Image (tube, rainbow, N blue to C red; front, side, top):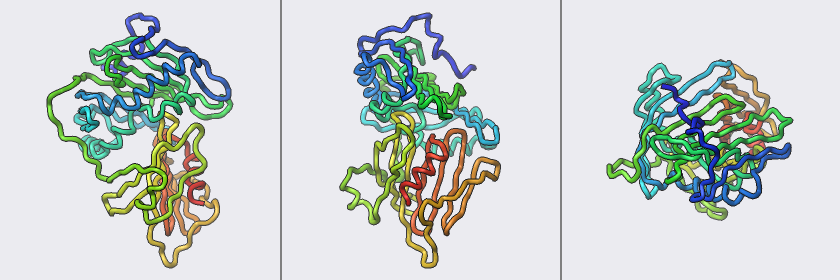
Length: 363
């Protein structure tokens, strides 16, 4: 079976206007200073993208999807995950997502990989696949290359959307592209492909889907007691002063603040989510009991990362604190552990961006 099935083999049709959704077939060019679609189509595109912000979470359906991710490690080794999962969603936003077949995994034990995927059910459902987290930010940061070519996915009529992020063409930042197939009736994204500099990193497709199913399911229950909050509410939720990154990756803005509880030790963390409209990055922070003899890292002394240990992770110690970075393809995590506080930045952003976010929040 070829996993990249049909995204642009669409019945020989030209780009079509989809009047019911207020869409038009659009091509756009990118200027050196950023990216924007033709202003004539801005309103229609914004309306459609705003619908995508909520559609997935409230369209009752059941289906099965094939998911494939490819990560290239700093060593040059490619790590592939390829599996199938079931998905159930009801009209109130409850969901169940379960990996049931492993075709390829970085683990020697397929069962261990399946358990890992299912233990991350909530996170993967919210953040793994294509989501419009903020339509305005998306339109600021991405070129909308096309709306409208009709194809069929899982026996559903879909229109295609091509999005591409191009920052300063004189920089070395990768070009991120999303190729999407969206059900014309439900508004669900039934197929997605993400590539960086022309190399596929993520792809997913519904192999079958049923709308308004009658079969009951056991909904996912979050284990971290996550609660979003607005400015002014933090005093009732935290017993320590909060901080936030002030240096962000180009095009990213904060879209959510939340209080989460680590179920392993009941510690309370600040979780902030940042986005460019599609991609996300996270800042996690907590204060801990100060050690009597420890020395807190001062100023902007996070040290210089030296890769080692298989070239996918690194550790730097300075001033009684430790900085740990882990890279897996274009996904990275950087954690600062000090005697009185710890912070984590994670996401599809570069190692320098992660360090700047940490530094601007902590020092």
